[in-house]
Image (cartoon, rainbow, N blue to C red; front, side):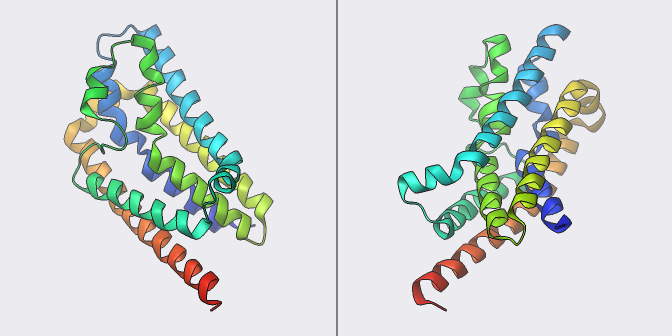
Length: 215
């Protein structure tokens, strides 16, 4: 039983989704909403984010085959994308690949903000999708692919469940930690994500060279 894979996969998904760092955005966008409307938005965020990640985990290989993308190439490209996201996170900023200021300002459709921009791309953005698909490739290359894929799905569900709890108590949590606390947590997650991104690039490069040169 590869518990190391389970812990690493969960930590990676949690770091890139960054539910704690997203609390200020959720609080700002749902300001003035009734408790019932906030509940509906929270439910949509978690359902949409979880569904998107599960779909890409299940059908990521089909997408690879359709576009002729190799796993090493995706690891390198994904690692570069994740590093750019991580670099922005270490500066305590909301990454443009997750949600632009324009999208936040246009989030006036009440309940539908749980789908866009909160569910996608704030929680289930390019970074989270990339992370999930890369860990799918890791699981398939391991000695216990079925078990590790199960661990990956558990990591997704665990992150979504934690996000649900955090969003449920978003206002009291945000009032306690403040914007500076949320930014500090985002910086820590960004540092961890940067290290994971470098690992993805190194792994992809090694596999690409090995496949090309037969090393």
